[in-house]
Image (cartoon, rainbow, N blue to C red):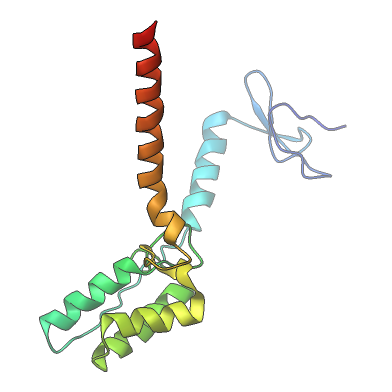
Length: 164
């Protein structure tokens, strides 16, 4: 006998069952009032959360290196996250990439050398703003071609309407 009404059934025990005025836990053996259940759910949810904050600092000898590092981390995509830079990501791979970039900036490598290293390792996808080359030619020209096509269609339609 399983009481399911707006609840979730996980097999032998339904997690919660909503009746008219009460919320029953299990098969109705114990009756809990709605405020009590909400308090328990609130306590369980928020007592087990862990905030994954990182307090990583990257000391630089000059302000130009620090600004270069910040700019580079905002231009590199986290390959784990959904369209997020490694500056904004807390993924372990993003931490590794930031550490590698930090070492490369300290070694006085140029921005292009750092980007080239990352592109060789992860592909063009790692750049949030892809370079203009034979592979990205259509990507960069599509907005211009789309605008030209739209203008052509509108001008053709306006000419047709003027003739009528």
